[in-house]
Image 1 (cartoon, rainbow, N blue to C red):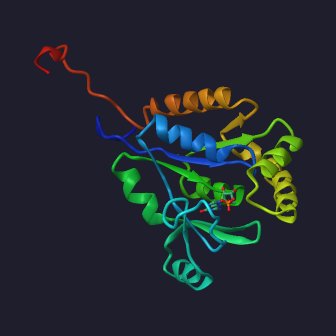
Image 2 (image 1 turned 180 degrees about the vertical axis):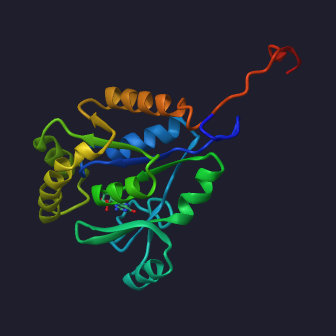
Length: 212
Ligand code: 5GP
């Protein structure tokens, strides 16, 4: 029984990476809507808040001083500089939830993803990739949350991220949102059934549902 007690459920740490504009955010949101066993890990960032964002929802928006303080206190599971800003996953967003059997989603870049894979080798890692670089550009222009210089920087960084996608367990093409979402659900469903996560006890008798 893998040295574990029956019925003890381990939460899944789902690491999702992929270049800006690949549709990561949309897929994560849909997964959380369809499966309430998943909770989003809210990261810290030193970047400016966008007009549609709320502190504590998409991110904890903090300054460099606070970020340094968290590093000194070993409060981060991982942290990295992405597109010129600092981002970090707080241990407090992850550790206790996993211990309680709650599944946690991390939306982090490849540097962070690789660091988490080292520290938590039983995490599930998924890399979302676009059908073409042109699709990335189109998405970023449509999203309209960055200026042209920022967009070019993100597409440039995308090439670096894509070079490392072979380190991830699952590579998910986002050509069509419905198909990509179905595939993400398949990954999650299979991962939930792993014996390393949960070993059920099978009762002798069929449960009597008529009383409910
Ligand atoms: P954005 O600023 O556009 O929301 O995110 C920029 C990039 O930072 C995305 O690739 C996102 O996955 C990544 N990111 C967000 N939070 C974290 C984090 O806590 N750690 C790391 N390493 N990357 C993060």
